Structure formats: structure tokens, C-alpha cells
Length: 289
Image (cartoon, rainbow, N blue to C red; front, side):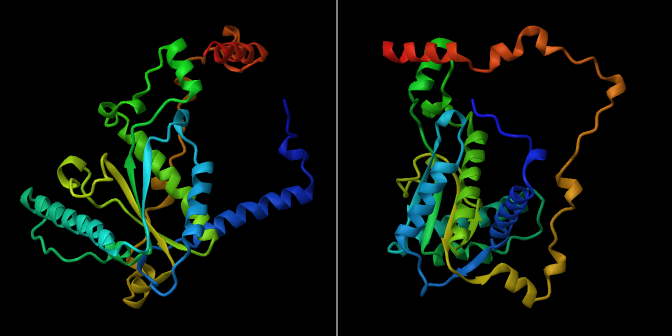
């Protein structure tokens, strides 16, 4: 077992290096701005985009390594397909407005074409994230046999139950991919404004055979949302919520809290930290198979 020294023992040069790396990651993600129109004269190579996708696949964590989603990639040569996807977003936007008006939330439904979706039809590359029925690896098969673990990711009828998990994992992949693409000098945009009921609204698009979660695009940005906001002098009208509204540091009333259970008396460490015997156990199980 390799033990790392406490952070306080790091040399000043190592600490400075850590700070530099953190700043570099921060600066990379600061580059991300929502694209309205991509540059059709400056198209990244398929090799560059696929390299970023592969690295994102390598780096993105997944619960029990299932990765219960698929990233469907539409490349530069298929403009008609991007227009079909764009129409899905536009139709959904209008339907949401109509439903809101019918329910009394809106006074009117104008059916304008929202400019925030334009990235879909101008991007050289569009990614559609959908749910996927997954397979268990050898470790998970042993968990199923030994611990009665139920792999919901393996059953189509159970995907809806873990829908929140799948959407969360798609978000992890998107965030990782965003950093990798921005590092290459590329731009990205996202939308989740499209119908989710795949059996009803996506029959004409065969690869969306499970629920879609997010649409992402990449390329070299030509015109950005922030440019429009600055040109029309509306930036000050569009702030994020206050940090304190989003991040809540929990403070409990410790005087009234029950005394915490002493887990060490239950041999917590022995139960939950793998040892040599655990390795022997799993080696034996693999040999049995």
C-alpha cells in the first residue's frame, strides 16, 4: 500500500505546482461560453473529437462501471439529421409554451424560434446522450451471486427507476468532455429542451431507442450568447443566483444531537477496508468461473 505524505509536508515547489494545476483547470473551464452559431469554415477533425470522447470515456466515473448511457455522435456530413434534432427542440419548446398557457402559467404562446437552439444546426458535431441497457462485468456478476445485488442497469424496464442516476452520469461525462474539448480550443453548447418520451416523440430517429438526456454540440464558435447580451446591453439583467442560495453549508444543533455511535467498536475498519484475504476470496471466485 502506497502512503502519500500529508499535504503539510509537501515542498513549496510541489505546492506551487498544485496551485498552478488547479488554476489551469479553472481557466480551461472558464473558456466555455454558450454558442449560438458555429464557424462552418473551421471544422475540427474527427480524430480530434474522437480522442476527446475516448479520454472522457476513460476519465468519467460510473456506478459499478456500468455506464448505462450511449453517446450518439452526428458528424459534419449529416446536416439533415441535425435539422431533425433541432426540430425536436423547437417543437418541444412550443408545446411547453402551449401547455403552460393552457394551465394558466402564461398569457400567450408566441411560437418564436429560440436562438439558443441554433447551435444544433450549425455545429459540425452533435452528441445525443441516451439511456442504454448495460451488461455486468465479472466483478458485478460475483456481487450478484454472492450478495444478491440487483443490477437495474441490465433491465430495460428498470431504466426509468434509475433515470436520475443515468442523467447524473451523462452530466459527469459532459463535464469531462467539456474540459477536454476546451483544452483543444474548441467550444461547446448544451440543451435539455426536447421531449423525453422516446416511444412517442422519437420513433423516426431509430438510434434514440431509450430516453434522451442531453444534447451537446462542439466546434469552433463564431457567435456567442454573451456577445448578443453585451451588444444589447442586457448582461447585467442575467446574473446567476447568489452563491449562498446554491451552496448551503449545513450547521446542525450539536447540543441536541444524539451521541454518535462509536463505529470502531463494531470493527468498522475490518469490515470495510479490503485486506489480503479479500483478494484471495475473489481470486478463488474467478478461478471457479
